[in-house]
Image (cartoon, rainbow, N blue to C red; front, side, top):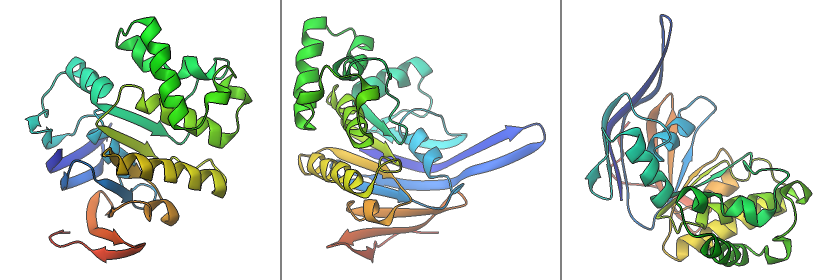
Length: 237
């Protein structure tokens, strides 16, 4: 589904260069559950932003579903992002004085889906995440775990091929965090590709594969078997 070839990302400010990603080679198959780990500043969020069409690499090639999207226009990437990808962020990114259901339908508004269909689909995804009883509440009336479930419902509304979750348990207590990870596992078991950025070991153990970054370089690529991480063949530093 995703193939990165020698991806680099360099930020320039005045005379200073910051190398966020260095020659990343990575293949993610359809239906994988991949966790990206690494210390602060290792490049894990930058990698997610490049893979999720939120940012462009400085060099290298990116293939998505077999198509070369390296030089695709910003408009083309935005269209792919809206159709193919769902995002869940640590900060939830909800409109606080807006009803739960209205937060969830936002991607459909941008996709020009008819209003009647918007609310039917929103109710369906809210049922999937167990929040039908909160449909007409405002998001600032919800707990952290409920807010993240709303964010997950919003990520699902366009039936995306890939869900990117950036530290989705970072603002949650352990019980709520576990519930979110179980939802992501369930979605993966249904065939959805999940790419998780996390610094939390318990969250990474929910994945089937873990890559670790240090200074913008992939230093480890391992499969997770029964919550025991085993080294994946073929990774290179």
